[in-house]
Image (cartoon, rainbow, N blue to C red; front, side, top):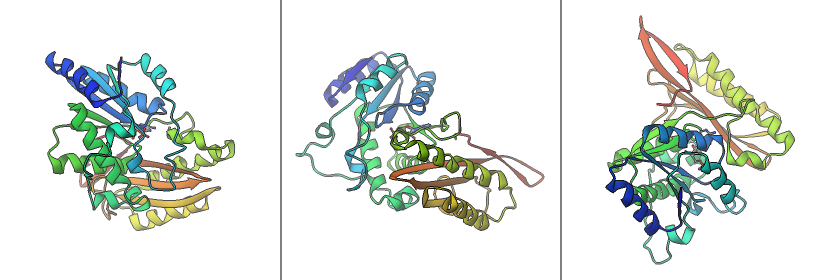
Length: 297
Ligand code: AMP
């Protein structure tokens, strides 16, 4: 496993892989790695000849007052976890390497999709994400890039980005990895106190309870209201958003023909948590729509 801190070092290592005709899978992360990240690494390793992981806490996707300064930075522990994975290259640049003060400012913006769900709650967040992921794609030139379904709005934004920019990268989406009790793994879970960790469990449970009630004939406006009401009533929660939307456009839907994304964000104490369930239409028989939960597309 080679660790690169500069773009030049990474490009040199990448050139060696290219010369030997190896396909590259990229896993972009902000570090503080857990099994969710490792599941992306393993998917990449199963589909590509070589895997690169990036570890970069990207300042431009945090708004002033968000948790950029206290975001967990656990580089040595991250490397230790990666040692037993099939990773060829680690790219861990500094902010100055990624955003040299002398470089002109360029922003990648997906103004409509990027302003929905988390983009509505965190204005500018997806400009930061799209810009840094574009740069990482240009630096690493992967064949495929692996993202988690846990960040469903990010998936929609990045799919739209590669489509609009004709980026030659296959965006792969991997299922959300959860703790044994159902809480989605997140680097931010370590902010939670013991009480908040228990309270946080209501998020996947409420999403699941609403997903279970969805049938092709469901009144989605009513279920959306019920989702919001349940989250609002949960101990310790302050609701950010509750949505039943199209998985690609992130717009509210009134039909399930193209599937549904049931997504929510809540604050538990000072910690913002997100989670979602995707319902994918799998078969049409006798005009009936069958839905399956959680599948990565
Ligand atoms: P982050 O380091 O939080 O920016 O996440 C890096 C990548 O890991 C993103 O594509 C996330 O969607 C993905 N990821 C984070 N948590 C999970 C999880 N619990 N299951 C699957 N993927 C995840």
